[in-house]
Amino acid sequence: MQDCIFCKIANGEMGELIYENERAAAFADLNPQAKTHILVVPKDHYANIVDGVPSEVLADMVEAVEHVTQEAGIRESGFRVIMNTGDDAGQMVHHLHMHVLGGEPLGEGLITR
Image 1 (tube, rainbow, N blue to C red):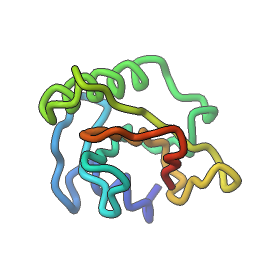
Image 2: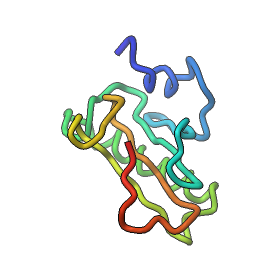
Image 3: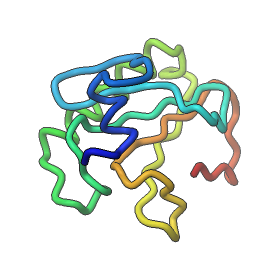
Image 4: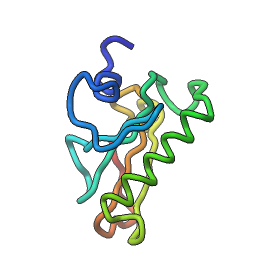
């Protein structure tokens, strides 16, 4: 999608990547809701998790989560992964993405948009 900001970031057109593999990229959230808040996105555009995402893309996204949680030092202490789907869930950018949050106790009420 030509105007999608996450497509541009994931494909190196703007911003700074923390990590990338063949089909996914990770970068810091500009509006962090936890001490560590990283977004993991596919390089190809999918609106959300129910948009026919190939299993290979999801596998690369999970691999990116594994990498960034290790590098951020939150893999052992714990982290949360959130995927919002649609406006009612608070999805603000309609490009599939995982919020990876950690680095502090998150509690039960943390919702990210």
